[in-house]
Length: 260
Image (cartoon, rainbow, N blue to C red):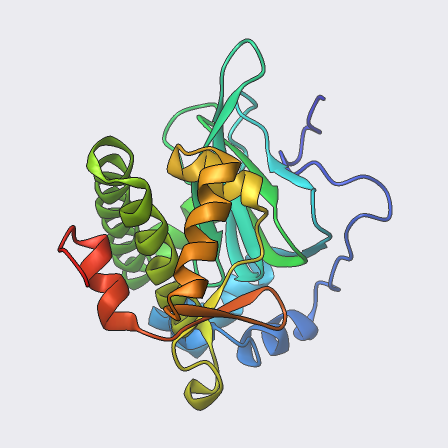
């Protein structure tokens, strides 16, 4: 599929709803659920207004392509709701999921001319899109935003190193335990009411996606999750969530320590 000259977000007619570009944009930023937990938290009122006017809000259903690997890197995205899966593709059609971007995280930042990965919505996703020239202007005019973005990039590099360890050295039980703990951490970082999400992990992705991400078979992922459930380490919850009943035990499993 070929991207339009303006953006690499692949959104067919009717697939996205665009917010009006006026004062409503500033209000959108002011009332954003994750304003204090995202890249925007370093911006003062003037900076926030510039950020709002430079962005376009997109509302996307599950299964929509946001970034296509190899296409021109013309836009940068900040996820404000939902989950996006990131992946790399091989010439024969196989692909490896390399991560998941949740609310408060960004994707698409690149000094290269093309995207080195693909990105697709897992569930209903809301994001802010910045075209490359707009982002470059913001970084130049607002050094605090640039520093915040640099810190986020550093965090991403640390996550990549953790993923290499996850795929290269951990057992299936250790991988699944690590994944569930990561999903719990991600959910807690974006939750508005802490008491409602205590030890809760958001898992909107399919078992196929989880298996792809962890380098396991679907059967192994299903067996391991079922074993954790039988051992009363986790329990199913509503809205694609899993409650962690014993965080300490999962931490021991994820770190390779023996458990009873």
